[in-house]
Length: 420
Image (cartoon, rainbow, N blue to C red; front, top):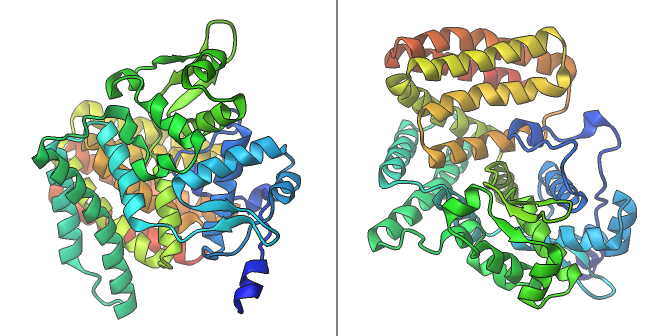
């Protein structure tokens, strides 16, 4: 394709025309918010999910501001807010001029690592948790991908490289005594916060309080107060708010005396960004799925060694909810229940960094999986069937048997995945 043709080329980005066309990513990583998602956050999410599913068409245009507004059925102000979210995340940016519009970017690996480090550090990852994560990744690397192609092995190593960079970055700051003392400001990559006035305001708001205060819900102020405090107009301020809301790090409570309130950020927004990186790198879903299952073996081994009765009861409740959803053919909640059951096991490890990496690996393979109700139901019933004996090994703290059963579950789930 010539340079001119490439500039003029465009893809059509629009919300899914039917439920079955929607990506499964949001449900698999716990990002689905049918009633509470702001329009700009939804537009930004759907654009990223569409680009992942299309194999990340680098440098192509996604339409002008007006074209996107018409496509999504929203105002141009909403599109500007969505664009600010994408620009901060490094996935797309608006280019001016006759051949401009929203342009797909090559996702920068270093910046993505910074985002993961920021989120992990926000939750106070300890040296011990960082060390445990590094050891788990090293065992996954040493295990290799036997019997697979050279290319699949190469791609699998790239996946592990990304997360080992995260562990190294966190360990480096711990050794320096820095510990990310800047608090919540590390939530977003520092470089990303310099690109627009809205991003700068988001960064200033993140410095309003400590990470602990931020997690517990700190009232930042009303829109009027904050616009005055930062000397910014309402449009730029609302773009800054959407940047925080897209990360799940703030919410606007309507009514007198309410205003913008901080929240604990969602790991799912990072998981989706990692999927953007993997798509931009051209990684196959098979390579990422292999690493997901290999790392899950390490997670299950750690969980089996540490599981208490309370932990196991939590896993059992999650499996019961999954069984009820399957029996009631509640397709809207089944995937959320599967996600909850997997999360219950990961939570036993008490390691937010390991949890974040597992969630990131879980997201990408679902990007191009069709929403086939029958096959999804069969796959999730098999997941439930294989999870019950695994729960028994957690109750018995039988590490060897837990690892054996997890390997069997992974092989079965991979076989199901490849039928889609």
